[in-house]
Length: 259
Length: 230
Image (cartoon, rainbow over all chains, first blue to last red; front, top):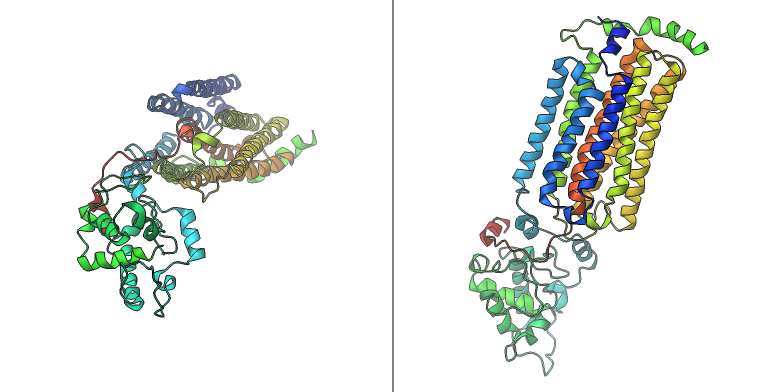
């Protein structure tokens, strides 16, 4: 088709290539200057100019360095077609994951599972209710809590039921951590690993059992000191009303084993 | 030069015909294939970039970008990659002009600048690891290392390709008739450059100052959306 000489003449000259290189450097410096003042960094308004500058660089490289400008038009359409699809995929994914809303996003937070916790509970696996209490009935210490008069064997099966509620229908484990309970690694609500011990002292004059009943059925009545409420009002009727009284009874027995 | 003599000897039989090859599109098949590949690679990087953007600011534990991303150093490595693109077009010009010394010099320069860029990236990865950011530390680590790691892999492949061409050039087998070999490698190399232009802007200039999530969330959500989990 074309002789090498004619082919070369369709490409930019050395001087033009140098000019393009300087142009690209200059844009990169401008981009850097935009984010140089500390007050400008990470500001929403910088996204538009930075994106436009980067698009200009992108275009300069593909049209001149990759000489799309001088080549068969079909190549331009093939590449821009793929690029457009790439953009569409990018925006679709961001939209699907509702990442256009300001971060942090509640959905991602609500489903967050702390990686380290998950690893630890695998390794330790100490405090399942079955392990925690001896299956043999043992003599009650004289000063033992009056809230647990039931024989240990009965409370055992009830505690296991409670754990099933905790990790199942109650979805408590989505938000609460209990070390040693598989899956109970949520970080949205307070850690309940030692809730039985803590519950006894939370409200003067209220036993651990009474406190747990109140906290499950009316979570908003009392917020313990030092509890960071990631999502005020999250643990409300929508979660608790789905539980039967028997579920709540089992749950309380299970939680009372978390000393 | 001895090489010059050999060039015409070697180039004459095999090469040359690629340019006169008849195709329905009027575009050489190898070149068309490279452009189609680059077009599809846009989707590959598009999805990696989308993943980074989706999980931006969602890490629950540090280190977060604002504490470890070093924008000035990365600006320098961006310059290095831009320079390598300039060296690449010079290599193609030298090939078209049958400037044997120029071909070797510019190909080697391009590969060398690519190696420097990879050096910057290895330094950065190492610095991040020392700061406690691994690929499994948080969402930032996972998406950052995946995205920039795949880009680095592209650059590394390009370096191998360029060094291969350099050794072909040393045997005097590159010239105007085999310019397409250099041109296609150049297309790949420039593509790697433009991907970095996008990554540099999004991950460093825009996302480099992200911090962790705030302690509390002010947006109330309907707890019933959690129902399907049970």
